[in-house]
Amino acid sequence: MPSAQAWQALDPHWARLSKVHLRALFAEDPGRAGALSVALDDLHIDFSKEKIDRAALECLITFARSSDLGLRREAMFSGAPINNTEDRPALHTALRNTAPAPPGDDVEGTLDRFLAFAESVRAGRDADGNRRITDVVSIGIGGSDLGPVMAMHALRPYRDGPRVHYVSNVDGAHFADTVAGLDPDRSYVIIASKSFTTQETMANAALARAWLGAGGGGRLAAVSTSIVVCRAFGTPR
Image 1 (cartoon, rainbow, N blue to C red):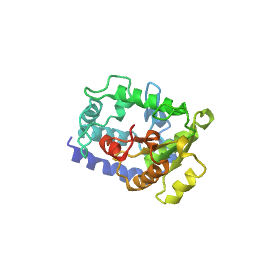
Image 2 (image 1 turned 30 degrees about the horizontal axis):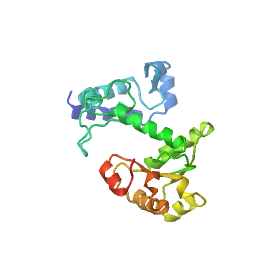
Image 3 (image 1 turned 180 degrees about the vertical axis):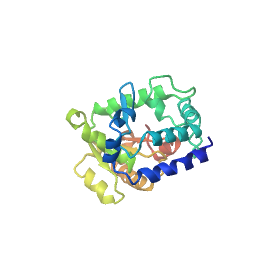
Image 4 (image 1 turned 45 degrees about the vertical axis):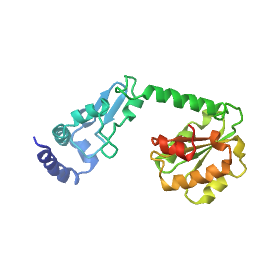
C-alpha cells in the first residue's frame, strides 16, 4: 500500500477512537494489555494505555512499513548521512551501542577521550594537570542545560569531585550570581553548544572567558561538534 494511502487509512480510526474513553476500551477488550504490548530483552512497551485498539495498531504498522521505516532504521544504524540539514550521520545510536561503530567514525576513541577528561576534572585537575579545581561552571541552554542539570540532581547522592554550577539565562546577572564567591583560578568552565553559535550560550561564554582572565584557557572546555570554532574561541579541549 502506498504511504499516502496508508496515512489516509488512519483517519477513520482516529475519528472512531477519539470519542471513546480508555475505560470503555478495556471493558470491550479485557485482554488488550497483553495484545497491545511488545517486549524485547528488558524493554517492555505497552500501547494499551493509549486510545488505540488492535485494528488501529495494525493500520499504524501498515503505515510504518509503507514509509520504509525498516530501511530508514537500517540507514541510521549503518552510519548513512540521514541528517539532511548537516549532511552527516546521526551517531547517537553508535554512542549507545556495543557493536562496532560505522566505518570512519571514531566513536570509541571519542568516548575514551571524554571519559578521561571527565575523570581528570573529577580529580580536580585543569588542562595542565594541576590538582586545583574546586568548581565546575556549565554553560548551555535548552537541552544543553536541562539534561546535565537533571543528571546532576538524579546522581546527587553519589557525587564526588568539584562542585557543579549551571548558567543558562542570557541575563548576565545569572552568570554573575553563579560565580560570586568562586575562585576563577580554581574553576573549570564547560560550554555546551552543538554549533557553538547559540547566542545566549555564547554571550555567557564571553563573560566566562573574561572572568577566567589571561591564562584561563587551561580551565575552559567545550561540548560541541564545531571543533574549529571552539578552538578559535579559545577552548583547548
